Image (cartoon, rainbow, N blue to C red):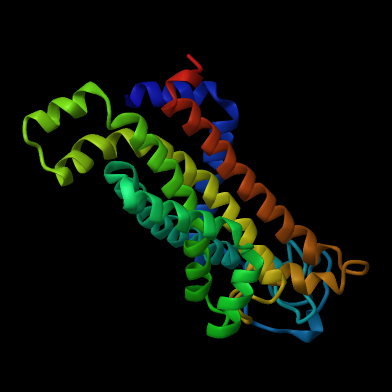
Length: 284
């Protein structure tokens, strides 16, 4: 299996590029304290709005320029990647667990439980994300934890609906009937027989959700609903750069490029995983 994965990865050039981008972002986020050329929180008004590659009279050069408070843009982008990955990883993991549990239960047991869960999914999908984010973050306050709560609440229905469909297609197969005839318990049926067969769709959804949440986190940060300053986030940096877009283009451009490249890289990895895990899309 490992050799097949590596062979398909080398043939899927975009997947390889996406994996390299994702690894670079993870390494950058993990080693931000070492890689950042300056303290992302340190203000120096004498160095404000320096253009990219500027060399101040003292200290290291500002490779991507400085912002309106003299803070190094590159350092803030590096530390902002940590926030984006933490929010996206926690949100995807928690939403995946909730959606997987409810989707398995709905598809396996059916009946009233299935109807109740699916109606809850329909209600959730019909509720606009921005309104829900405004309501939750307005009542509870904007923070990293509350941001994760918003993404979990809005993300689990996609997992639940997809897993339910996969379970409905699998539970009537002969190996499931044979396991039931042998007296295998419901819990063992779901864990040992259903879960391995729905793992592929779960991984694919999670990869695309990672990219979506990174973009949404930046969008909410741009609106002032994300992690609050002085913590550097890509969305906050975009919001700060909006007022200086004519005179200091680099303030919004480089965070925007970071968001675009990271989301594209994760989507490329998702495409590769889809081709790898779906036999109908084999690239052999």
